[in-house]
Length: 373
Image (cartoon, rainbow, N blue to C red; front, side, top):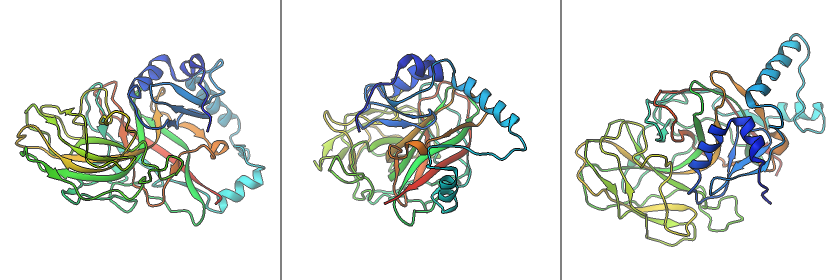
């Protein structure tokens, strides 16, 4: 795909300058491929360095709030009339045929998450919170760890397509706090770290998705990211670093040393035990993805707490310039560019660094569509 820059003024008019600036800052040091902004109509992606690329034909005069107002007004006018929505199909009959043939489905039926109390500028995990899907459990103990899939408690339910490939194509989603953003990701591996230990701890388990070293392969490991997640028990008030952690990179180089990550003394449950304004651990210079872990280590004895090392692969980002209202979007017209969802993927949500501490409720529908083989 050839990437073109999105007109910054139009994107700011649509999302708001504050939202655009915040999203851009979260990807300033991102090393993987561009990540889709699923709540922006068209096909817009946030790229390494924090720029925005893709196709965006809104924002000339209207914001997302203006468009939502017009959308609701049109729905009101159309009440009682047959509803048709042209979204790039050859015809209405074609759209109905695809829908009735099972090519489109909603992840988990409905998604409803009541997030944890957060910390300003800090990312949080929605893995352990309910209600739909149900709260997930900690990763399995080292050295084996766990390879979660769609059957793992906490993952969003969906059906693998009978043929072809599945792609993220839209969402109708809301948040209770303005300017929050969530990432839909595939949780491809997690492992529980033994606490109150400074010994090196081996990890032998490995993901089964996104494991190719070929950049043109849909299964390419580039973009796989690592984050360190506090589980159901807050950490003791002890300064610590995650250091001498080893991983295999996207090019199959073994035992690469992860740059040291500064942990948080007394980190609360569900937050990332990482510095503010980060949602992924840095990798060695030149690396663009992490295939698997080989070793974990903490620099200090942290007496109590629960930690998961998690490898994920980004699918798309939803930001919320309007609150407490479903924001309606559909991307079937862009399905050739829509992010791939692998069969049996463990789809979950995380909060990008938060603008406020308030616990946020997220509700809505996320749509996936199977493309022909």
